[in-house]
Image 1 (cartoon, rainbow, N blue to C red):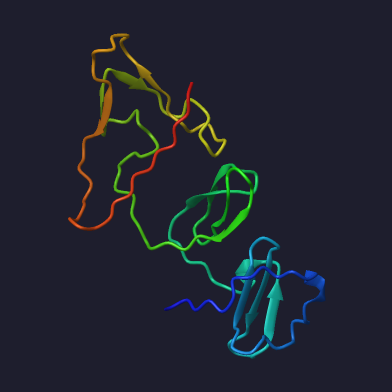
Image 2 (cartoon, rainbow, N blue to C red; image 1 turned 180 degrees about the vertical axis):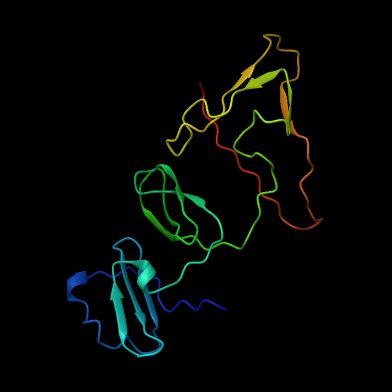
Length: 180
C-alpha cells in the first residue's frame, strides 16, 4: 500500500465551519487527518459519504500487536496499548508531529526493562529492579550503581544472549538514562 500525499497544509479555518458529514470530499481526496486539532475526515468506502470525527479510530484502523511508547502533549513518555495510535509530540515544544508509522519490529533483548535479572552479566555495577521513576512516570526503572570507587576498573553490563542480526540490515538500540 502506498501513501499518496495530496496536501500537507494545516487546515486554517474554524473546524466547526467544515462541511457536514454528508458533504463530499474534495476531488481526488479520500482522507484528511489533522492531528493537532484532532479533526479526522474520511470518504466512506461503502457509502461514499464523508465520515467526520474527532476520534482517529472512527476513520482509520491502527494495527500494532504490542504496546509502544510515545512522547505525549505534556512532553512525557507514555505507554500506549496495542492498536492505539501513536501521535507524537515534540518533547521540548509540545508541537504535534503527527502519527508515527513504523515497520514491524521485535525487541531482541531479554529482560530489557529488568536489568537485575540473570540474563545480564554485571561487572563492578549493581542494580535493583523497579526501584526508581522511569521516563513514563512509573516506578519501573532500575538504578545502576558502581560497586567500587576505583576509576581504573571497567564498569559494564552485558546481555548473556546474542540478539539475532543480519549483515547489511539496520539495527536500532535505544536507552533512557538520567542522573541520580
